[in-house]
Amino acid sequence: MPPDDGVGPRVRLAFDRGTLILEPAEGGEPVDAPTGFTPDPRSAGRLRAPAIAYRRALGELVRAGCVVDDQARGYEALEIVPRREREPFPHQREAVDAWVSAGRRGVVVLPTGAGKSYVAEMAIAQVARSALVVSPTIDLMTQWLGLLRAAFGEERVGGLGGGMSTLAPLMATTYDSAYIHMERLGDRFGLIVFDECHHLPGPTYAQGAECAIAPFRLGLSATPERQDGSHALLDQLIGPTVYRRDIKDLAGEYLADYEVVRLRVRLTEAERQAYDAARAEYRGFVASEGIRMGQSDGWQRFLIATSRSRAGRRAWHAWREQKRIALQSEAKLRMLADILRQHAGEQTIIFTADNDTVHAISRRHLIAALTHQTPAAERAEVLRAFNAGELRALVTSRVLNEGVDLPAASVGVVLSGSGSVREHVQRLGRILRRHGDKEAVLYEVVTADTAEEQTSDRRREHGAYR
Image 1 (cartoon, one colour):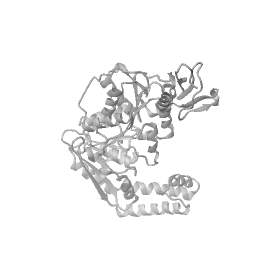
Image 2: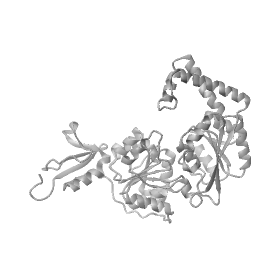
Image 3: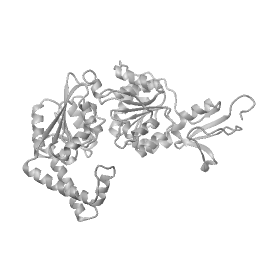
Image 4: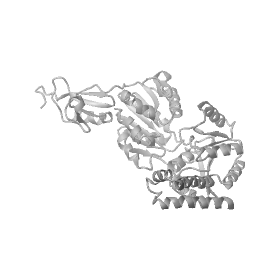
C-alpha cells in the first residue's frame, strides 16, 4: 500500500558486481518485482537481476508510481561537441535516425567500407553520455582509440586491454576485457557500441553485455548472422536490427564498383589419383563409424573417432592430405601467377585457409606474409608499406578478414577458405573502400571436382555474389 502522503513506494536500485539489487528505501514498503528480478537468498531475499535489466526495470518502477533512489547509474552526462564535423552520407544519417527512433537500441548492418565507425561517432555525440566501444581485437581497439581521440579529444578517452587500463568518460576495449571487467565497470556507461557484434552472442562475451546497465546500445556488423543461429540473442543483448544496407545497395557511389570472378582449375593426373585415394580412405572411415559430417556434431564425432584406432589416425591423415591437395594444387599456384601478372600495378590481397599455404606462396612469389604469428610491430609496418604503395601484394590466412583498413587494395584473390558466408563477405569488403576511381575485383580460385566446390557454393550464399 502506498503511504498516506500520496507519494508512491520508495525503493532503492543499486549496481552490485554486474547485477542490480532492488529493495525498499528506509521505511518503505516492499514492491512487486519488476521483470527479471527474483529474491536472492544470499542477500536476505533482496530482489536481484542482471544489470542489463536496468532500463526496463526503471521504466516499470516509474510507471508503477514508485519513487526510485537510483544508485545504480554511475555514468555521466557529457557536453560533447565533436572536434571534427563532416556531412554524413545518406545511409549513415538514415542509420542513426533509425536507431534513435528505435529508442537508441539496436543493430546497424552496413558493408565494410561504408562508414560504420562514423555512425558510432554520431551516436556517441547524440547520446551525450559516458560511452564504451567494444571490439574483437587489440588492433581494432587501438583504431577505435584513435578515432575517439580525434573526434572528442584525447583527454576524454581511455582504454582497457592490451596493457592499457585508463578509465575515462569515453573508452575502448575488447570483448575479452569487457567480459573480465564488466562486473566492476558495468555501471559506468550510458552507451555501449558493440563493433563486429556477431562476436557477442557466445556465452562468455554475452555475459559481459548482461553485466552492464547501459540503457543505450548500438551493434555494428556487416554480417551479423551466425551459422549456429545464436545471432537471435542480439535482440536481447543490444536490440533488433534497425537499419540494413548491403554491398550491392552502396556499390558504385559509396563503395567501389566491383566484380566477382570464380575460376575453376583442375588437378594434374598425379594429384587426382592422390586426392581420390585419400578421400576414399577418409570417407570409408566416416561411413564405417556411422558419422554424418553434415550434422552439427559430425566434425566433433570424427575427431573423437580418429583418436581411437590406427585406422582412425590413417583417416585423419587422409582427410588432411585430400584437403592439402585441393587447396595447394599446382594449377591454383599457376593461376595465381597469372592473376599477379595481369594486375601487376594494383594492390592485391591473397587469402588462404592455412598458414602453410601462406608461407608457400610468400616464398614462391616473394610476397609479404601476414599470419596470427606475425609480431605486432612487423604487421603494422607491412600494412603501412602496403597502404603507401611500397608493397604491391600481401598473402594472409585470416588475420585480415575484419577490422583492417586497406583503402588502396583493389584486387582480392581467394585461393582457399571456409564455407562461412561471413568470411567471404568480409574478404570482399577488404577491397571495396572508395579510393579514387578504382574498380575492385575479387577472384575465387576453386579446384574442380573436389569438396572445395561445395564449400565455395556455401560461402557464396549472399546477395553480393549474385
